[in-house]
Image 1: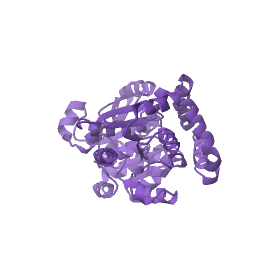
Image 2 (image 1 turned 60 degrees about the vertical axis):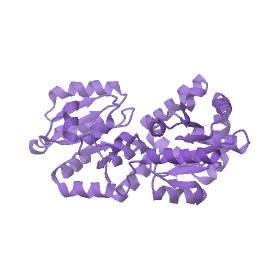
Image 3 (image 1 turned 180 degrees about the vertical axis):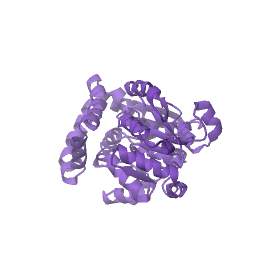
Image 4 (image 1 turned 45 degrees about the vertical axis):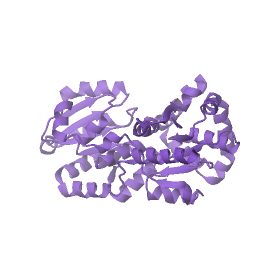
Length: 379
């Protein structure tokens, strides 16, 4: 049996979702699993420009990106644009198409819309006869995700199902299993032992600040604002900043440490985010699908800051609607909300209780088992 897991590296979340499913499938007998980035099977220009253009738009022109996102999610616009998009993808992904034909997997699991759309096209033309499982990595899908020949759509929550039904996906094709994150996020390793290992002091209200794998967002401004709080509040806190692959931000925060009154521990790109989440009391973050899933698995209340207009604002609306997160309009409001959580145990308890309505800590495992069932049916 062959299972192909595929994604496109335009933001680390899609890759992490694919890796989580791969890890959950590890060790299954008589099953060959391959996990690939579709961009590795494109020409050099497309591979470099695809993530670069996306990052430029969300970091430099977020309003334009938001308008672009919502415009292309309009059914009438998508009707005319989808054929062009499919043509561009197929033109630039010829190596990927040949790879799929040569491998001929029993099931393709996709955590990004581009490989989903390409495989769906191959199914429509009779060039691929295996199953396609389309894993949506946000709470609300987008027209880009509507690979109509997908055999199944895996959604995050009931609201995702309602959205997919509205878009015309048959109910029998939809499964609600959560957004897959590494199974390690469902395991407790012991807070006190972890703090010793990570060099985090005990006895403080730990505030984890993250901005995705690329370290975008106002992290320095948040640290500076918290540093200006009155000493009684400030001295109760300990800031843990994870800068991702933004090395400049990491070095700038390390330089700031000496002049700060608040405790700050700065880290670069870390592979043990689950451990940092476990030792934290609250997280300040952007609402990317995978970060949300990880935080929910760790029952970690969220303060959302500067969501990207589009998929992240949709995620934010759902999280705040359920009461599992609060949104800050600016860095000053971030500080006010942190202060509220730090001084109000009942607010923390309420947020953690509501998180249980949305968390699917075993999503990767359940998706893996579902995929295995498809290979059985294929054979």
